[in-house]
Amino acid sequence: MNKIHNRQVICDVLMEHAKEDKDIVVLCSDSRGSASMTGFANTYPEQFVEVGIAEQDLVGISAGLAKCGKKPYAASPACFLTTRSYEQAKVDCAYSNTNVKLIGISGGISYGALGMSHHSAQDIAAMSAIPNMRVYLPSDRHQTRHLTEALLQDEKPAYIRVGRNPVEDVYTEDNCPFEMDKATVLCKGTDVLIVACGELVRPSFAAASILAKKGIKSTVMDMYCVKPLDKEGLLREAKGVKAVITVEEHSPFGGLGSMVAQVISANDPKKVINLSLPDAPVITGNSQEVFDYYGLNAEGIAKTAEEALK
Amino acid sequence: MENLKAKAYALRQDVVNMIMSGKGGHIGGDMSIMETLVTLYFNEMNISPENQHDPSRDKFVMSKGHCVEALYAVLAAKGFFPIEEVIEKFSKFGSPFIGHPNNKLPGIEMNSGSLGHGLPVAVGMAIAEKMNKSSARVYVVMGDGELAEGSVWEGAMSATHYNLDNLCAIVDRNRLQISGSTEDVMHQDSIEKRFESFGWNVLSVNGNDVDALKEAFETAKTVKGRPTLVVANTTKGLGSAVMENKASWHHHVPSAEEYEQIMKDLKEREEAALHE
Image (cartoon, rainbow over all chains, first blue to last red; front, side, top):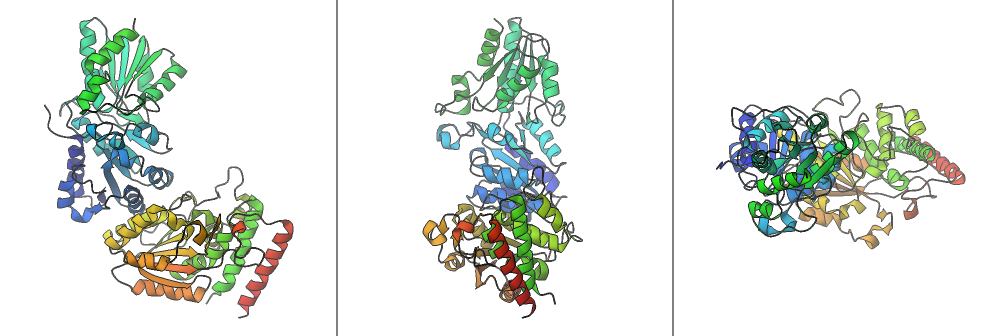
């Protein structure tokens, strides 16, 4: 079992670069521990800004820093970062086009039993609806590293959501194909296309093995780049399959499923089934318990795919 | 030495022409904030078309973005774009001169419009300038009604936490907002005590007096270890009795008769200022 959190990987990459690049600044809203940024704060205190429990201030200050040439990374729980400071993300980051990277930690239902106040099941929809805001949900630590490295190279705003717990590897250190804003195809098959993002890529990949044993051939795409969605890759892989299944840790509305359905229905109409969290406060439990309950595990995804082909 | 008092009345005429052309605009606040903008841009800040990309320039954020007409008039007078173009295109279809600041235009750092955003952004700029060891100063203009936004106080807190003596905030204290008196809508007095309790250096001046503003901005530069708030006590709609101290002129397009009277009054005050 992998013990390294995706959030820790973001911190590690930023620390590697901060030594040389003094414009990298990390900001937290009393969230340095939960964001795994304590190491950065202790090693580079002159490149760390604590704003206290004030998410609007967090994002506004980040935009001001960016306007003066800094490269701010604002790390705060996804639930607060994307709704409490939504307007700052919209106006100060996206509309003003400032180079602010918003790191939503403990995304989705990572906070489990803490309840709906701490869940971010709206963040993909909210952030994607803002012009000039990009949305990324890396699936494992290796992809998180590549994504963080890539984001250091550009000067545009982006939102990155990671979960709270370490997740099983999808890739290996030596084999993690990554192209910015292009989905990664994990396996190819001609019957069904499964498109997933974030932590649910791994169980989607596992579902392909279950389906293979039943003679069903599936393609699995890791759509870490929810916005800009890799439309070209999606249509390429959707060609010829009988159904498309989307899998996400998000509300049924406005997330990966909605976006995939828009593209498929307009260009290559066929059945699209959206596996997601319900439009309701989720049941109490840790991430795995919640995923299992709603069929967001390998067995549930395989079952949905199988039924879609009937 | 340029007569900034007269200039403020001249630029008010550009604002009125803009609003007549665009058939809309926040005329009351444009009039109250004019001396602040004129003093900052023509006496205080090192911002010009020539140095607009120089990292060491001072930074300005118009947090009360609805008074963009006054900012356009001042930026045009600084040479960022021709005033004739602003008046012709303001709020028209496809125009870059929209009803709130937009940084696709030269001279504008940050987009605004939603209130309560400017102070945190200015705090970020001031922290960055400290990190950069730059002598640039950061100025942000807020409205008094705007102070009801909670994010203003998040910014106020962080400005003193980080000892931002390179930051100067200005509140346009015209005592009126769209629904009426600020004291009726949401009690503000005393702004001075509130900011002082957050650790700010606070100066309260006649905000329609260029000399008083000059002195306040000079004083702000001498204060070390904490930010300065200048409470600019102003008259909303200043320039003509037609619109002075009337909440209904927060957002208003003058009629043809009102336009004639306002322009006559503004020209008279400009003339009077030139001969003082």
